[in-house]
Length: 612
Image (cartoon, rainbow, N blue to C red; front, side, top):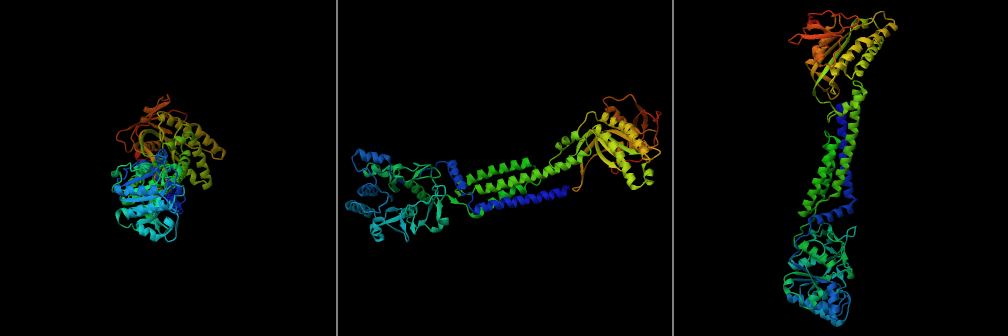
């Protein structure tokens, strides 16, 4: 395909890939297609961030295995739920020790022994304004079954009810907590409001919930066994001025849940982490939708749009580097308190990369096939792949300096011959002649540069280096003016022509600039330089000289094995050269062996346009 057309097609395909990759990413984001995978990356981010400093203002009173063992050892009631007089005693001890808030993650929804119930109510009343009572079952309007479901009684006791309902994500992991459920504020909200004395606005909870900024895995938050507090065997300084959350942590009580930082974590510790999140000013928040969408679009389009001049391997490396940078940036953002979506932008990046690689490989394959087809006409078939492999990233043979031998040939008298023949016959004759000569050039390992009517330009030693290029060129020239020309003239005789043709061939060796040249619409391989110009002029100077072949001394000098039949014609003046050029020829049938002497090259044709 034309280079301009190919570049335009590549650009259009890459733009389409960018739009498609970004579009699929946005669609997947909008439909939560990969929600579970996205959530799992949040868990990984917690793991990478590691354990944080435990909050100094929160303490757990844990109904743990040690509590059950201690109560059993003391022959006290050790089956859960414990008598409410135990809970009353715990509240009393915490109040006397100076606890700021006593949040009971224990259900008090059913009546038990009246004396125990009264003792609990009395303890709550004594801690007026300091207690929070959790409830799992909440009716519309925030109605709970605590103490028989009488809101007035709760107000009289100076306590508040709070919801302890968890709403795990689709994979069963608790990562967020709600502001309220059925108009009842959540356990963490009520606890934080009571501790700060300020209401927490619902507007702080995006879509009604917030991510829990977990401090670390289970048992990161400090705790005291329930039995120690019940028996008064704890240091008051451990709870003074703090929020104290009382609840079940023993696995046998089954108030355990999967969290991002632990396989399981007790409910009270989850609420402690949620309350800490609020008290610390919500340090972990979800990135806004516009930011996530922008990242999806950017990562989905950056590789396709940035790969117009890039090869597939570089595009892949760029994509991998971008993925690594994005991964690091997402973790840094998380450590700074922002949860940026990771899977959807990465999906867009992967789609954009795969699409880009497909386009680049397709276009590169087409262009390489074009280059292969182009050079297959001009170089031997066994070196075509080597030529293509040596092309640059834009599939052009970049300009290189080569030491090589240039061959020019021309059919003598063909112009006057063609004037008396039909166009069809002229073309048939030219094609037959060019086919014969091309086979000779290619058989010797030469590169056919161009046809100029019945003229031919070829190079030996370019585009692939050949240390015997001079020998190869002479071999081709002898084949051309010998057996090939004879075969062509015999064919003409068979066609009814009385006389055959002679040829002129010029060989010159030296340094040339070789490479693909041309416009975006058309590219050709050629050689440029004084060596090429001189070869062209030598070919023209054979006219009227009695010789069909002129070989410059530069070519003879580079031969590995100069033939004995090579004879000196003389030192000839060549236009464009300061010094005369020693010229040689091959003695053969019909060739004169007498020196030519001086040849005026001013009136000699100089070859194809652009070589003079």
